[in-house]
Length: 400
Image (cartoon, rainbow, N blue to C red; front, side, top):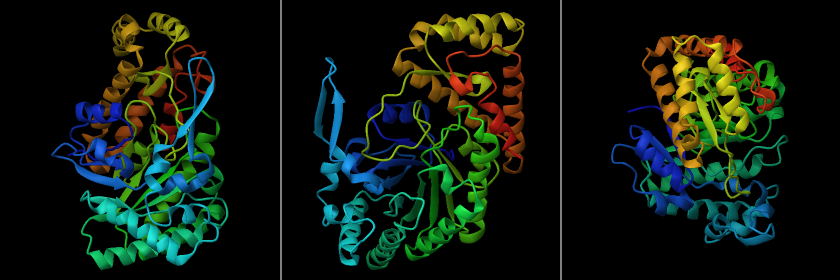
């Protein structure tokens, strides 16, 4: 079974997991979507997440705002909010994150975990709220962790408990001074929850956008965070992502056991119940280990890039095939499947190397993408990632 963990959030993703990632050892499903997406394929184990990260800003979760075809704004009840409102003390806990009442938090956590356990998950996420810059949420997260530990002792839950560390901006990670209190808090919650693993994600990190800060600040900060957590906590299970490539870097370097992955579109973590996003269609350029937004400028770029390559170059045939089938591939569903299929092949290439050699294998893999990108023209519609090698370069430099 493969180490990657697909995050299922919608029906399209569920179908793609069955089609492209049937060998996943673990698949993550949200509690509120469990009736829709369970059971999983027989060979996969369930990681069930109550997704209390939606409590991050409850005022934005009560309703969903959308625009109709006339451009008029319409509101409707948020399904996640409706689902969570069923649990005891939900409203009280949601509106008092900085001043939690122990008995209310305990009642809420117990109710959530009891319903979660009915699905018999192999892994279950410890209820936690996303991290903020200061210590305002330390108390409620400790109360939730302690309540989880008591619940586990009382019920004899035999699955693994996973402590989530959801960072909300780079200031919490880039420097060691900012990381230190977060790591200490994580250690305390890990032990009080009687957790077995840690899942870490920075929801603000878009690691394929070509930003100049990725190489010198953002990626090194996340890598250092994982090194410090491993040293301080030594979790039995370690998960990172979803990202585009940093999750693979951390896994290849042996800093995590499982890379969490998106499924064809979102390679960034979104907090539960927030404003919905319809990502623009993107296609993978496998030889460059990146995606590009579909549109007339991309078609023009493909024509230009093909002329830069010798007919014998593998990327010549790859780009030509994308150009030939561009109209069909550009359809959102087909684009998503094309990206997911590439990502699975990319993972398999690195997984085929011995564990001790995976970081070097990924380095060499990304180096080839970087060298190819340097020889190609700009992707004019890709902003800070307009250089073809812009995605591979910071990931390559983080491998060793």
